[in-house]
Length: 524
Image (cartoon, rainbow, N blue to C red; front, side, top):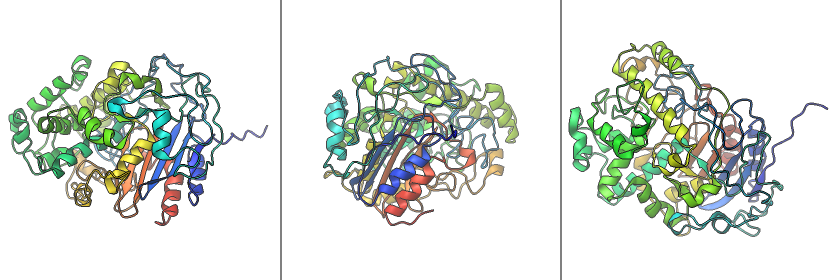
């Protein structure tokens, strides 16, 4: 025995000229114990549609379906729950000043009711061996919808199949549920882009303006010094509300699972810094801040608005609140390392230069606790059904790619946003601002960059290069687009492995480079 590990099984299709992406995806997943999906569209057409069930070699937190394991205090993108993309803000400074934990120590989810389809197989042409359930709002189910929409069948627009048979649809080396062609999973902070799209639809329709005071649409929000806070402040993480409470223990679970209670808490809160004068990643509160504006303007929750206005017209398997009939498709995410304890988070906040009883310090600790509870809830039916707009979106890579493709061009006749709206959304809104309080001393070249609701490229999350926009999520999920090239990409994974303080996720880099090369953008 040489000790050489076998290459991951990669199944799916690529178009001619994009074969290098398949090989790069396999290299990127070679050490990943979890499963992953990668979908790429170019000029609105599917060119890559791949997935792998993973190696199954979890060294931490690997428990059979139905069990529970480490429950995460890690925030979207980094330790302390308020860290920005790449750990560049919050308690984690650029370069990992926090050090308490990398993103990815989130939790081991409970099984989605144990409803796996034993024995089903998925061949190289990407078609399912068993029928999928119908999605919400009349969106076709996986077995019928995915093949029609993505060309994953032989003769579809993804070209000839280049994958290999993945074998059984259930089971893994750890007893977990393997990723399948029709699987969906938690998107973590990739979900924030779904919320941003809803806001931009209302902006484009003229019923909302980024410069509007939030209180114009949500009068209760004017309390406690927030009368001048704008919609743009919410979208760009400038609102000064990174947590729901000043209690470092965070909002109790009973209130955290109640959307109305979360909104009431935010309306009553006074900002931790002057809105618009600094920025800090709002790991969980972002979804309720922007989502409540969407609700006040549209008359329906952000999850329902997204389903009707975005997912329905495009035929997406993306939800903010998973319908019960889709539970059989859910695959849990898994931790690859333990999470920081509350004490470790507190120490990390102090190491960042914050006085323990300072409001910013307590907000960071509260955000960590709140996001940990929310993330743990995604291992339950109640948590998946609830609308946690900032981190609780559920879907697959194909739908992410299709969504982003419809932001920068037409997909089956549907374009969601105009080019002017996309340009406004990807215009930098935080490059000129410091992080609040003592955290400004941690500013560096890899700090977070935000437009209106989307992340912008930086060394730790380069996306598709200059001009691209998108959003990463804790553990390594990623959705993004590059308008000038017509590229749109979705990547979904089950192992919470990305450590933002160490730079880009190693799983991304091979295929990101290959995608750029295939699209004529050059590598690197």
